[in-house]
Length: 419
Image (cartoon, rainbow, N blue to C red; front, side):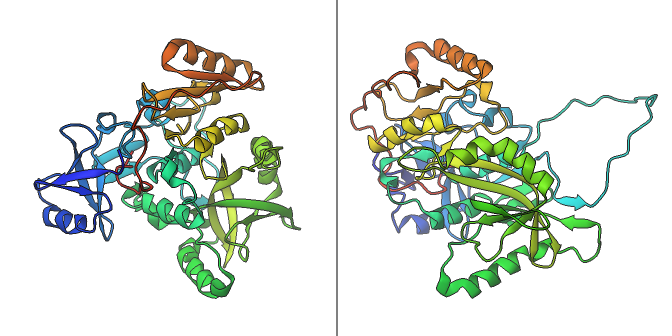
């Protein structure tokens, strides 16, 4: 399909048609639904109001769309999203999603949970419920914004301004701990020296909610998503530099940073690997104001992305994703969320081959035994329906491109990206 097309009140409208806004306004709030015409007969959609009208996918209809459509959603087992839907990600309505997370948005200094007596009389047993980690939340935002998808028309169109806008848009309508996610989320805007004072003023006003003058031991926390740009030691701990926030670093204590280096050391080293296009690191952090205008990191998680902002689980996936981009292919990068490396999730899901969608597996020679065995099992289970590459061997040819199979002419926006 050249561009997502909708059928409304007897007429066809391209996603970028200026007349679409007026016709969407005329049916917004009614029982009438636009239809996405990516397949014969179309698929019902709903309308969200973000100050302008956006056509989005109805819940549980993702597999009904054409694989090349921005509203297409792969089967749940091909990413870590399926494990969280219905438990950590709850859709109360088409445009209202609630997230349940494994972290709080309030920090109590020096507090600890009291332990009950060993002989406590248990009155009930409650089944455990999945809750999202920080990494899963970053994956959720990234997928909701459409940045784990790639179409040839996206070449040269992704930059921090685009990432900034659509990550913030992706947080709208999402409930988290009694607030909306966009109220708690800060994504630095693109930094420009000539506008540094205005940018700093907007940042301070957004982060003012972190100030908790009513208590010396309780701190409000917010979420910050930015590009990690290095760190350096200080007398009190470590200073973390976030790109586009050069005049406002984050601070983290030495013990926490030691854990971060142990957890993400391989990822940080990958940014200096012997590759032509160096990957980048995105960081999501729970931050609070220990003092006015001094922002401290409580918890953080990191995600590696290519120079085109496509997510990477590890460096061994980079040659495949770059080959797909250079070949002008359309694909989805499935995200793990809270699944481990042994979950058998493919490195890419090709959308434009003869038998789309096709899972693509990269089996690294450096993978641990368990992860390698699970990937091998996934390849065997899918048989000829999957493509695989063992990195100690030359990369096989990519599956042939289906005739007329390509993504939309314009980069997808939030249209149809509601998980």
